[in-house]
Length: 493
Ligand code: ADP
Ligand code: MG
Image 1 (tube, rainbow, N blue to C red):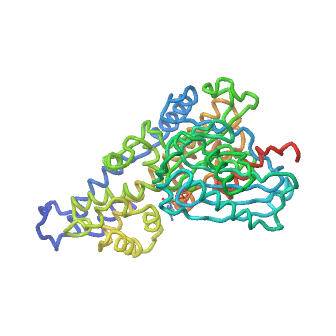
Image 2 (cartoon, protein in one colour; image 1 turned 180 degrees about the vertical axis):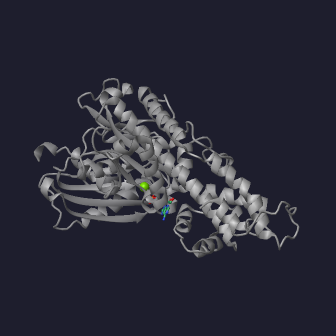
Image 3 (tube, rainbow, N blue to C red; image 1 turned 120 degrees about the vertical axis):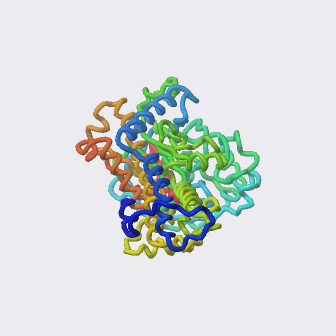
């Protein structure tokens, strides 16, 4: 939808503009369009992601990855070693558990694996919300709560699930907070994020914390793998598809991991040289090189709890897209009475407009944009005419298009880096990028823009080999699979 289409419905622009605060009932629609158009045009110009910009972002992503692998602190990208060097093959057998702590909920899951032919024989999971006071309590209180939830879940294990005599139950622990991993089954918490402020955990091995709490519950289980959620997603995808090489999460935040050649990781200094490859957790949300940013992005960043950090995440992930659009609409309302004479009060409240609202508005295909109107009314408390609704949709599209295309360029950056290490192993054959997260799952326009950017960057022939797909099982089962892949009983299968 072009600006011209919106203005055509109201005729030619009036050259004069009423001063602010003056009544302008007759010309309201014309002057709205007139004062809003330059803001929209500027936004579209500053958010543009033509092919050269995408190429620059992909190249910079690959270069930053290389720098982060050279030495710790060598780049914005932490390039965290996962110590995961055996991915599921499909041959895993037995009963495994997973525990996923990553936000306001924690999930427990068990799965009975039947090997290559039977695969997942049975699986069950439960989700428990974490009482808010525990997010501000002590480490012991939080881990006791988690361990007791796990203990109750284990007690409900029925005859469908079967642990061979003499074996301990093993669990994969997905922990989506920044961790300095020290081995496949240990890692030190760097800091709590996402609103958690638990005392006494920073600097500690979170697996030891969980083990101690399980001990206090009388629960005799072994943590076989500590994994980031992206790593869990890649494991889950690899179980079904041997060509899965990269996993990307696009939800509230964003992150990506991929399979790297051991000899392309200088900072390992020969440790773990027994295996050929290791999954690297890029923490790509911290990327920032060459992104097309606007005054709205800069203001949002300055007002955030982590100014100057996570710039890629703030440009492409679900937590922020709605907020960027809100800031643009606020400026339009202030400049040109987009929604009438006064600036709607609700529009000034940070984060009132959420990414799912943008998504719902963009699905409206009716002539008079009824759904856009009612969402604007419900969420921002405004009455809008058709011209204003069209402008709002164009703002949404501009921000979502930039986000999707930049995410696509980031993926191509990872693929380029992998191809540089092993010529022909990525672009010369089928490669699967496993995607997960609410933004990717629910936003069709975002998904399309992401795919378009990948196709433009790689060209039609190569991009036919790159399969970007929603990962069926997500990180939960992935953690259980990694517990299986790293089981101490693995050789007894
Ligand atoms: P998290 O990232 O918190 O682990 P999810 O992967 O479920 O959780 O992602 C949730 C995020 O996905 C929300 O914060 C929101 O930004 C985005 N999201 C959820 N539903 C939709 C939707 N219908 N349209 C667009 N984005 C959505
Ligand atoms: Mg998640």
